[in-house]
Image (cartoon, rainbow, N blue to C red):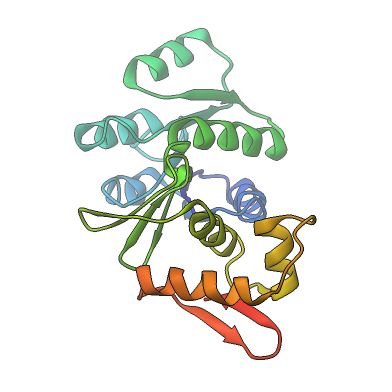
Length: 218
């Protein structure tokens, strides 16, 4: 789950945006003033949303400058009630990724967040960490530390099915149809054999047997 830091001094707007972002699947950390936010610029996060004009002596610009002292890559969206080209230029010069003028639609902000997250972290979405294993979905490779595990096409297809449907139960017939296709004619014992081979190559994988039914990855 991606973590968003929201710095907005309007309490009602802060709560509203938080609710929209959480509904979109993000973890949201909120600050109502620049002073508190400035003390947490080193926190682990995937994106910051900064209001430029904050109550007190600290502005969104100050927070961004502090963030950029240690992190040049984390994306930042500026919000402001002032629709001035100068604000946008300053924000871009300081390293912001987007600028949205108040009043704005929470849905529009969420869309902008989604677009930036997708653009910045798209490569991360192709990699899944499961226990000691790193699975590169794009390259169809599995690593345990520096060692690459040699999985067959069917073994990787089965692993992919489980990883993208974690905690979901599959019957043997389900697995036959997904991995071998609807036109496969044969015994469902091939499913048990494929699971056995995957377990042998990845002994730390938690594929639970549902007796009389099928399997589930946890």
